[in-house]
Amino acid sequence: MKRLTIFSLEAVIRYSDTELRGLLFDLLSEISSIKLDSDPAPHIKNLQQLLVHIFKLKLDREPSEDEIQEYQKAFKKAVKKLYVKDEEAFEIRPGVQSLFAQLEKEKRWKYGVVSDYWGEATQFILQACGIFSKNKLTMYAEDAESRKKQTALLVSKVSKEGQELKKQFICLAEKPRFLANDFKVIRPKASDKESNYYVYPKFSELFGGKKKKRKKVK
Image: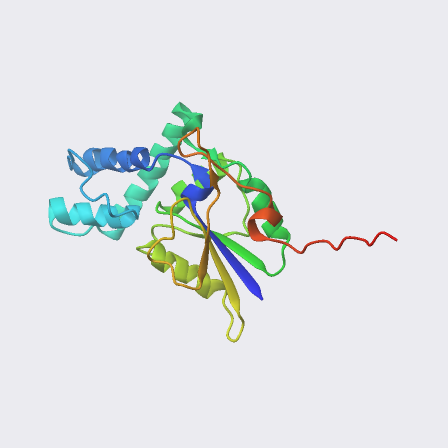
């Protein structure tokens, strides 16, 4: 049986979503002279869909492909500046590197990451935290308009006709509404003392492994 484990970006990297969305709002003011007093759509997590929503709201039109690309590049630069200013803006979750390394060794195991942000910025955030693996599957804001569709795309990439696929989704919150029932939700253990701090156990503890048979004592 093939296995697919999907991580939400916030389950891999510790960061402030409010701060990153704020970078987009600053760019809207600089590039398109769109002033925002507050977040106009907290329910829209996908950054590209948020950009489209704001353009419709403020300019009564959708952004062109060229405009979207301009914002993608500008957002990556803004994320880089944030990291240069504060290296602690992005921190890898303890234990993630070990998990990824083990997943790389498993022949029947595929894993991926779904991100609410554009590809270039997401890759920078991952690499800034030491994640350079090319074997992981990653879905970005420009790939699909929601995590539901991002997840479906990942499943389609690894699914083969007639082959059973065991699906797991790793996130920090309770089971997301968009997940199909055939997904098992795994949550890393949260700290009681520090907010937004999660630690992953060993691979065998998180996913379960074959128990070694004890030798009988004669």
